[in-house]
Length: 475
Ligand SMILES: [Zn+2]
Image 1 (cartoon, rainbow, N blue to C red):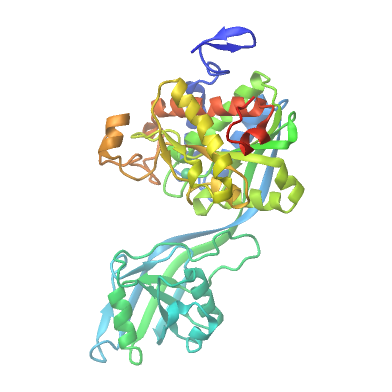
Image 2 (image 1 turned 90 degrees about the vertical axis):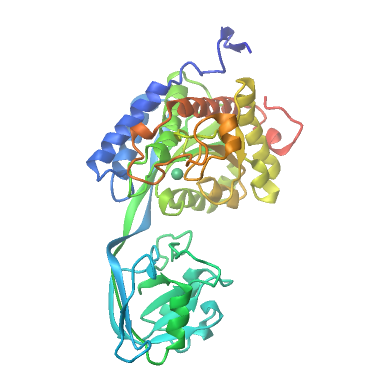
């Protein structure tokens, strides 16, 4: 296919020769060096702020004429287990029997399951109906509440009701079908400044331990010790808003910039964040004048529950007019997985009323793969990443992904190469998510696909009409 850019024939789509993988990789090297200075991590309490400063400084150096750099500060709760928890009982079987339970086998902490605690010889109280209403917790005062998980309410709701009723701790035991212990978050999902956090210890225990405790409820006493850290920290989103472009047709392009505490986050999500950075710099350097306003967003605190993008969208939604100005979102989270599958987010999996518009976004991305004779696969848009807060506020979204911890199927191996039955990213959320973990091949393919869609969208004359109608081409 021959492209014509500004009257000059070009080898590829607009700016495709300007966006280079070595330039993106150069930004990754900078982020990696930052992680090395911060416990091999770019999480909220490690190298995140330094990463944000790097992105800001690059934008201010190269793109200051093109987009206005700003930051959004917000608070996030950060929880970590400092020492393994301890749990033991007396009163099961013979009165004197002391039983020491095993962490990760019989019980374990929930994330955000309270700060440190040291409970001794505590009585327990079985709570019925999954602890979903206040009246279920009538007898828990001064005791450890033992509650079956899997009910109609969030575990957070049941745990918080127990705390409000004066319980000293909560043990959620697995429903009979669940084998593995739970490690979910005992927290309001979209936590924001001012919201409560649980302040009593909350742990997951096996079904059999839960039933045993309840059977011996009147005799059993528990010792429970946790050593956790739970603090509220400040963090930021980094934004760059194009000076030009129609505000009523704003496009928000996003990638999270934080990593997990366990690793430097080169694939997740250095790859998406630096691709978006280099794309912004290329648009700026070539003065690629947008018809529609563009907001480049680097989200903080994605790894602790999409808290940066949730903050951005919450602030946006405070002003209905401002929210309505945002026509669409695109998200780039993991673009260089070593055993990659080139995934495009499937618009059909967006909330019902956004299926049409989100499908238009996925078709535009697929157009790139088709014109380049490259294969791709659809993946759904449920949970997972920063597109979610946008979808939940009625803003269509789409994006790209190369895969996390899930294994490659034989069919995918046949289509895309790599290793079957091996994770798409074997270093997902681990300390080995280093520069060596980056697939430059995937990074090139996916950053070019992103660029293709972005260059078309920002210049589109009829963005809203295109999003709304199935048979309209992007002009
Ligand atoms: Zn991610």
